[in-house]
Image (tube, rainbow, N blue to C red; front, side, top):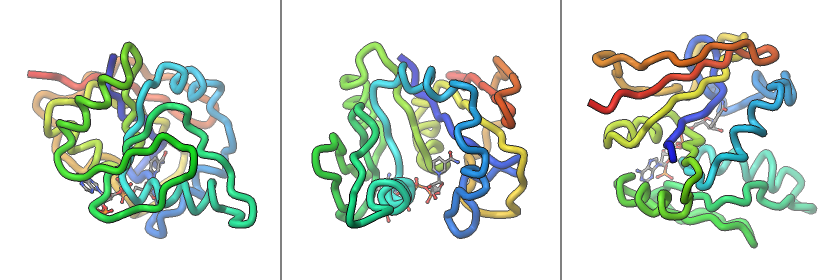
Length: 183
Ligand SMILES: NC(=O)c1ccc[n+]([C@@H]2O[C@H](COP(=O)([O-])OP(=O)(O)OC[C@H]3O[C@@H](n4cnc5c(N)ncnc54)[C@H](OP(=O)(O)O)[C@@H]3O)[C@@H](O)[C@H]2O)c1
C-alpha cells in the first residue's frame, strides 16, 4: 500500500491555470496510453481538496444541471474543506478538515492492500508530505507552460531529494515517477 500523488502538470509546475481551468490539459484528450487505467485499478481510496472537488462537480457531475452525471470513482473519497460542501447522491464521499494524519489512518483502513491517491491540489499533497505520509510522486508532464496557476507541490523538498525511479514517454506526456525518502 502506497500513498501516491499522481497528477498532470505543466512544464513550469502548475496543475491548473490562473482561472482554475484544465483546458490546457483536456486538449490532449485521453492520450495517456492506458497509464491512468492501470493506476486507478490499484487505488483503494482517494483524497482531494475542495477546489478540486468543486471543479469535478462544476465541470463533470453537474456540467449539465438538468442531467447530472454519477460520481465516477467507486473508491471511497475524502474531501478536505473547512466549509460544508454539496454532496453527490449515492457517492461514497467523506468531508473532513484539519490534520491529514488521522484521515490517512482511516484511508489506509479503507484502501486495504491498494494504494491511496492524493488527487490534488499541491498544498494538500504537501500536508501529507509534512507528516511523512507521502511515498511517491507521479507526474504526467504536459508539453505546455502556463506562467501561473495552482502550484504542483509548494514545498521545499531538497535534502534528501526525491529519487527518480522512472521516466518514460506517455503519448504527449513525460511520465516521471519519484520515490519520497522517509529519513
Ligand atoms: N492537473 C491535474 O491533473 C489536476 C489534479 C488535481 C487538481 N487539479 C486542479 O488544480 C487546482 C487545485 O486547487 P488548489 O490548489 O486550490 O487545491 P485543492 O487542494 O483542490 O483545494 C484547496 C482547498 O482545500 C481546502 N483544504 C485543504 N487542506 C485542508 C485542510 N487540511 N483542512 C480543511 N480544508 C482544507 C481549503 O479550502 P476550504 O477550506 O476553503 O474549503 C483549500 O483552500 C484545481 O483547479 C483542480 O481542479 C488539477
